[in-house]
Image 1 (cartoon, rainbow, N blue to C red):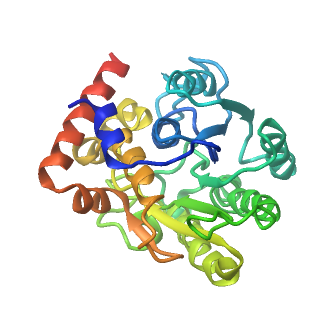
Image 2 (cartoon, rainbow, N blue to C red; image 1 turned 135 degrees about the vertical axis):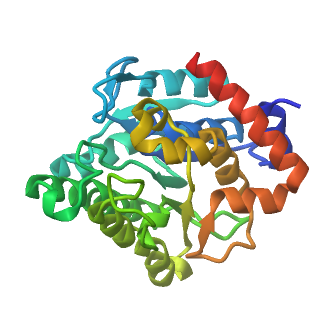
Length: 309
């Protein structure tokens, strides 16, 4: 059984009269791209955002190497899976463009977005520095890109989503999925630069982590569903290219497609309480069972190796 068959077997979404629309931020590569493609295969149309428009334009700040992946290539792959996919350029550091960029996303669709996946963050040099060694300008950039920008983007989305019709099957108007991190909940075993994460990454992820539970509290009765999803360790293109600096992630991480499969499944799981925190890998392993989960890991790794070769 290949990865596509496994994805198809895990979830069945009936959209005979309407394909829901998902907005995935930071979908040029990595986890965002994987989630977008899983949603496309699961019956969603898409609008995706990011900074990298064309292949080869993305740069790994840790190495200076060109990274594979772009909005264009993600859109092409999504379209091959049967989805309509629109691309919108958006930069998390440009706060003046956050609300306008959401409006561009809305204009690109039929005027209704059912799902927001908050995945985009700021990725720049300096993430492996201890706090006293950090550039104050970088502290501001990380706060802006990792916390303030997704807050403003979610605020814009919420203004729209509260006017969506209530889905007769689920009772929700819209869903917000926040891609969070262990860094927002616990202290690393090592300091930044020696196998751990920086104070700024942890602090911004901690603030971001509170969004889902607060949105569920404030707007759950109005039909808004919000969930935190921790992907765990994932071998993205940037992780693999960085080498020794992120070797601890590459050694234990799963392919991004595993996170996409987990997201696709949990979207139809009405047993998940609004405002919940879900560890993507643990959730999928529990719901698939050991044999099927191991098969998915193998299939997704094979696909990733084929894409990177």
